[in-house]
Image (cartoon, one colour):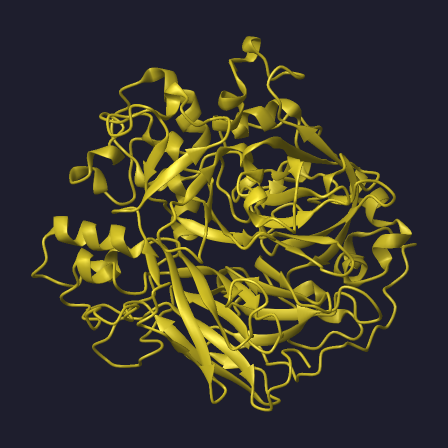
Length: 625
């Protein structure tokens, strides 16, 4: 059995993705120097990162040498082990692919897997994590629910059992997708899975029915043979990042849904729509042979039922997950939730593909902290916006509303439902700013500032640069900082301001105060702790810069602003995803996705197993101290 590290879904998709449109937003050829020479971009590492490309009169960055972070950073490296910073930190492998989630679940046997077994076990390629305290409101930090996405499967990891037919393996792969909810408790400073908990749950595209809600629910373009009313969907696919709501639910994002469908399209009217999302005759998985809903010749509208944000109530294992269509349809990477000053709910989300856009949803209704039941449908009514980043440092949020501007019948839209089904095309027409793969989004809880990871975009040509994406052939990515408007409705306002917070790549190594391993490449998932420090997980650093992917942390304010430190190094072949903290900040959960070698078991006959890791301090202090 081969134990080579399988290519990531994003690596495999890179060869398939074709840019099928371009925004009408202008190309800012000459604005880079003008934008980056402004004084507020010289406050942190951004100035030094681009010092070589700025005019000679631009001053160098000041010598920032202090940070609130107390750990000694790791050196860069590349091996088959997981490494965490020195200073009393320890990493516990908590949940691996195939680990039992229920008392009656079978032990993991990679040579004899079945769909029934996999549905009782932890799924493959864990990604987003969310820790939800128990009891549901105000519980102790020593008990809670861990909610984990399972983004995709690698067929070569599921094809090493010669005794299994392709049909059985297809069922196992389907069951390994989706989401896990599992109860945890902490005993003697170590976390453990409560396998007899009545709250444990596996959500999969094999047997979990979901409700469609919001403006697109029931539309004819969401109807299939299995669902002639267009109001329910079997399962969720390619769940990458996500978010949590103030009322205690979890949002999970459907990202690269296009790769599951194939065949000859039976409905030519969907041709342009499918092409815009990358849906075509070639399927990455070949599931259509045994599950006709993935065959475009049989169910040409089935792809329209994916690419949404799904809301889950983790505290009720009998609840029906809901796809919230008001949040738009695209390759959602994140669903970061906050409140405007007027109490309306705001959800930030990026479309994870090169030259795609940043979005936010603003609810019509207002959050009611006193009556949780009043919040259950807040995400069904509101306005979805896409972002235009201007040279002067302002963000304009452009509403995707049927009948407004170009979103009319003349341009092929007959309702708000169609605007949401074809969100990408609607944003094209509005002139949103094409970004360098907008992925993770984190919110600083004290300052209210928003951080957006732009992982990379090697395909950007010099004439395609714009003020928010200033580097051509951007192999290393960068991070933007969005500042909500003051004195208005804050996050729910139609305008904000922005700055470039940090750039990835080796060229930042010369920043005064930055350690030799402080530079990162290809920022992906982001998280903020309760001190507004930003934690940066990477995906693709090995191919871009020759270092292992990992986790970095930095202050977002003060003298240590943007001076990142290397905290964790992933095993060879893996990316780090889904960092999240317990409310007391004493545990950091994260996922190690598609590791190579035999990690974490290191048994010669065992496959590599994606896993969730719990990081704690031996002295019980908070992470980062």
